[in-house]
Structure formats: structure tokens, C-alpha cells
Length: 324
Image 1 (spheres, rainbow, N blue to C red):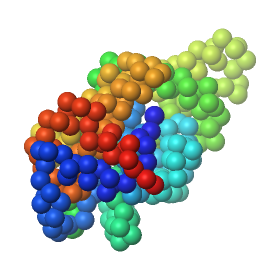
Image 2: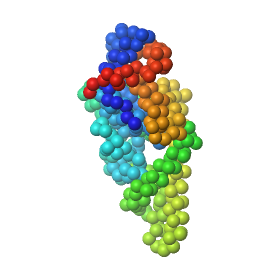
Image 3: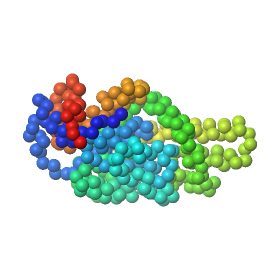
């Protein structure tokens, strides 16, 4: 599912025309450029949400996943495909040498330059990824470079862990069917360092024993068992990663007091087909779009009014009349 193409002006105008909002709010001066941050644990729909927003508002996307920043392992790292990007420009996605070490400091400097380039074109930077240490290094940098120049809005895509675990397990199985083993094989090195570059990716160290033994083991039963053990390790370590990411997000919210809009997508993951598409639109896509519109046009949340919650929302009205 994707949100229909709507200009940000359409969304803002619909908000302004709402009986409970005030026209004068749109005239508040914009003193800082705006940046949207999409956060969440692995598998919660961050990339999907970022594309929905980027086709709604004139925007470009900056990847903040510390593994997806490297070239290679597109399947194992679950990089968004060119088709799914729907023409939206992406930055820092598959751009770095897989053998290099792209640190949080490297990301901060690269992201600042990219944000400046995007805003200079009059577009909205959307930062999306699961590496919250990268995002924290950018926003809470010691030199105050980011906060002195930009206002930011955080959207947190969340899914209950038992439901997310089931989804992650299915996703790993799909990766396996899509050729993950053959994709991982060139990155195996018996003397390789799994603490640097793309070899830190979940999947590379977990398949170490399988690749060490596959060439000399003739018993297909034993080889299959080794494969299953590697796949189970990938799933287990992905579960652990999701919990680690969730803990960091909660720390940013509860300790550092970052303001976030939590979007509980659990109901989406419990449904299938059209029901899942409708649930995504209702509980994730539309609330996110409305929040970003309020953020961009300085419209306080209380002024949006109950009408938006009781009807099909102002966003749907904008969709019906939008031109591209």
C-alpha cells in the first residue's frame, strides 16, 4: 500500500480549513529547517513509512542503518529495492566500501552535508534506519551543529515483540529462498574480522561454521543440519537486535526526553491482504502524514480538532482533491 501522491500544500490547506484550526498558524515564521526521523526496530515498516511520506511531501531519504550503508548483501541486510523506492532519492544507502569502517562520526558528518544539500533544494530530509546510535550522534552532537540549525520530528514505528518475532522468522525464511546463502558466501573468510564493515551484518558470522564445513561434508543430512543451525542463529540474533534497538529508542524517549509519535503497527502485522493494507493506512500512514504536516506548518496538535479523528481525516480530503 502506498499513500496517493499529494502535495504538502494540499495537506496543509485541508488542516487550515478544518473548523478547529486557525489560519494564522500557517503564517508563523519558520526559523529552522525541518527534518523528519523515522525510527523503529528491525522489521517494523520504517522503510515503507518513509516512502509513503516521501511521496506525500517533496522529500529525499537518508539511510541511517549502519549495515545498509555498505555496498553489498542487499538481501541479507534487507535493503529497500529500487522498485520499492518509487523514484525517491536515497542517500548513504549501499555507498560505502564493505571492508571499511563507517562510524557514527562518519555518519554525522555525511548526514549533515546531505541534509544541507536536500534543504537547499527546498525539500524535506527524512532520516530512516534502525541504528539509533547513528541518529543520536547526529542530533545530540557535542558541537550542537544539528540542533542549532534544524527542528526535527520523530516517528516511531513499533510492533509488539511476539508478533515481530514471527514476522522476522518468516522474513529470514524468505531471504533464504531469495538466495541469501549464495550472497553471503563471498564474504566468508576463515581469517576474516567480523567486527568491521559489512561483515558485522547478521548472517555473516552466523554462517561461518556452515561455510567452513560445506566443502568437505558429503552427508547431506549433516549439511542440512548445519544450514538449519545457521538460519536459527540468524533468527535468534535478529530477535536480540530488535530488543536492543527498542531499548535504545525507549532511552531516547524516557531519559533524553526526545518527543516521539509512537505508531503501533501490531494490528497491521496480524492481518493479511487488503485488511493489512487498510490497517496500515489507518494506524500508521495517515497519522504519520498528519503529524508531519502539523510539524512542517507549525500547527499545534490540539488545533487539528476531533473532526480529524472522527471522520476519514483531513488527509483523505486532501487526497481526493490533490493534483501532482
